[in-house]
Picture 1 (cartoon, rainbow, N blue to C red):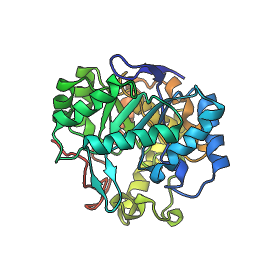
Picture 2 (tube, helix red, strand yellow):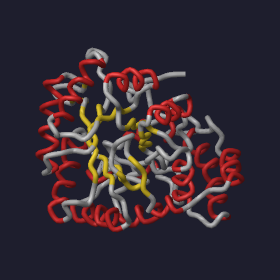
Picture 3 (cartoon, one colour):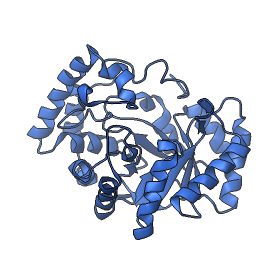
Amino acid sequence: MQYRTLGANGPQVSAIGFGAMSIIGFFGPTDDKTTHACLSAARDGGITFIDTAELYGGGRSEELIGQFLKTSPHAFHIASKAGIRVKPQRRFDNSKRYLTEALEGSLRRLGVDHIDLYYIHRRDPDTAIEDMVETLQGFIQQGKIGGYGLSEVSPTTLRRAHAIHPCRAVQNEYSLWTRLPDLGLIRTCSELGVSFVPFSPLGRGMLTDAPAKRAAMVEPDLRISNPRFQEPNLSDNLAVISKFQNWARDNGMNTPTAALAWVLQRGDHVIPIPGTRTAAHLNQWIGASEVHLSDTQIQEIETLLPIGWAYGDRYSPAQNIGPETYS
């Protein structure tokens, strides 16, 4: 496993992190034994950075990580997120009162007194950026978090927040089939010394040797209502991905390793966080940081999967409330 710096003055973490949304059964059924086996495989494979959120299973993801940390207390640098209320109805909240309550809840569930990276899960337009960053800066001064991050934001929001207090990381969706951050966000992160943390770097299970099957998806899997997983888009996407699968095989790699290696080579400040429920799936891509794609291979991938190749929007209109758009 290779290692990278999390933000300008942050800790050294594994070049590949672990996204912990899947461990609560969001993308299919699982159980605590399977989750602990998966987390053990991540630790044993050199992963030292794990990403969770208050939102994931109503805190259940944090609880499972907290249970694991009791047996392996120094396994991971932890990132968590807050900013989305679900009761009495879903809404964004970046107020000091809510974020303070949310952070205390996360610390309790994780069983720690410090979180290395604390993200605003979604920006609340009713809270001034200055007030939001001031709240997060207070958490840093109190020693409760090491640094703050932003999620699904534009380059301009990052610049405004960073000018008040340096941001440690930005987490946005990014992969070979979701390339919006190429329109300035990855470059802005690099310029400011901010880590860029791609979530869903394997295309929500599509950039693999066995792409996700729609028939196996059950609620609350967001892919059910996602345009890219509905026909005729799904079949069209699978046809394109099959060419990439063949390319990976011809180049001595499995598909998720090739897809993740491409993401890793977008910059030394890029730290992807693929997620999975099982150790078996994790072991398929955990070695990607050791793979270096040649300039020729990069160009071949870009020819097979050029920017904008995916059929269908990355979110439905209902799902697309919150992420900032830019062009």
